[in-house]
Image (cartoon, rainbow, N blue to C red; front, top):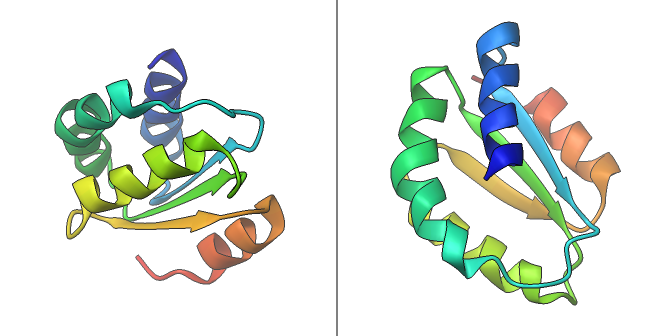
Length: 98
C-alpha cells in the first residue's frame, strides 16, 4: 500500500492523468489489497485527476489474477488496462486521451 500511496504523491506533484504501475516482479496474489485500492485509493486518485492506469504484470503469476479483480473493482471509474510488458503500457498511456 506504500507504493500505491507513492503513486498518489506522483499524481499530486505532476498533475498527470496517466499512471503506470510495473508489477512484473510481483508473483504472489494481492487480493487483500483489491478492496482497499478500489474503495480508498481510487477515489483519491480520481480526485487528483487519474484517468488512465496501465498495470504491468506477468500473465502467468498469481498477481495477474489480483489485477483482473482490480479491473472489475474500478470499472467505470477510470480506464485500467493490464499489460505483460512495459513498452506497450507506455505506448497506450502516451496515446490515451484524458
